[in-house]
Image (cartoon, helix red, strand yellow):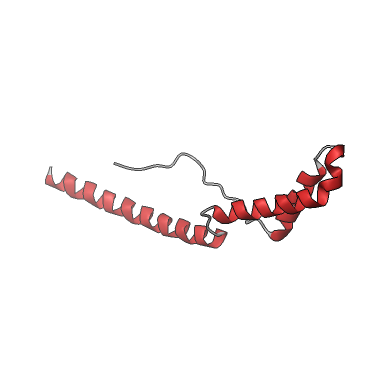
Length: 94
């Protein structure tokens, strides 16, 4: 039995303070004109919610992901060699 992953693994770079600030600002700017007077408060709240939500996620860094990707690649290579060896031994027995 051989496992295959048909979906591409995608990851996004980490949300930096700057990207959180930009997103919070854009959310605040998208509010209707009547709410613009409370824009600063909204932006602070958006920023706090974004940071709190992101901190709850169980994310890994790109470096950690790449290390695990390399380990998985080596493991797959070893498994392929073992499967080939097993098939060879089974053929010899037949």
